[in-house]
Length: 165
Image (tube, rainbow, N blue to C red; front, side):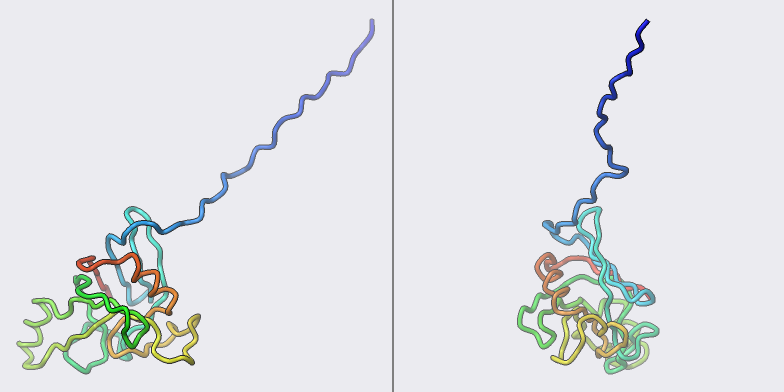
């Protein structure tokens, strides 16, 4: 009786995990959440989000109480204006002060201030990779210029913004 060696069939290689798709941003931002403790801005594109490191006002701890306190406000706002030619490269105005902020300031007998933006860098010598490691704005939220350009493109007036401690 003759024995034959079975012929091995070639089995196609199977990948252990599917290849990851690169996130392509091609939709409008539905909401922005800023977490001051994490130093991150989260931009939500439907059920997907992208985050960026950011810098805040020079006195970042606590909620904004009055004009000139260099604090970044905390609360629920929205984008009220887009400025393509601002000092900070491009900017998105946050609707601060809201009714709550005005009431708190009125109770204290002070002006709540205003002109709070999400903006790019101010000075040419700012390092776009490390600017977020220190707080240098007057109460705004700062991204590097590449990041604000992306955010500016996909954010529209009335986009909700939540800023948490």
